[in-house]
Image (tube, rainbow, N blue to C red):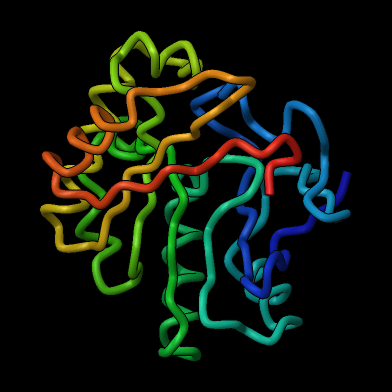
Length: 204
């Protein structure tokens, strides 16, 4: 166990706000290992504040991009995320900020959070992970029903809200193949760009 809230990978800075998630994806890296390049991302507790994150952030030389992505769903810690993003924007205005998310935030927080992120976040990458609801449910194992529709609604809300939005899928998990053409059409119809993330066994 550790309290690594900030880590570096491929010359980019990643922020690991929480280990909680509303999905239990069958391909998730954390099912098989507890570290990324030797950096253990399982947290001792869920009590980290923006001050804690910023203290670790300041130990790094900030690169061109900061990404909220760790061993959990970053938008579950919405207030902490916003405070950290504000700090980065104020102190490193040329640094791009991205969130990698499962797209459940509006469902969890019971409101459209996108206006709260406008001006703080440059890009949101949302895990579409399926061309159908049944495929999504099998791969992502969400903890609530109707999650696939929530994801699509969230993608549209991000795009409509003026934030650069990417819908992503994990392709090739243990030989499994998605209908990428259909997934891309869904993404584009929702106003998002489309990205295929080839499944890599060690996750990166």
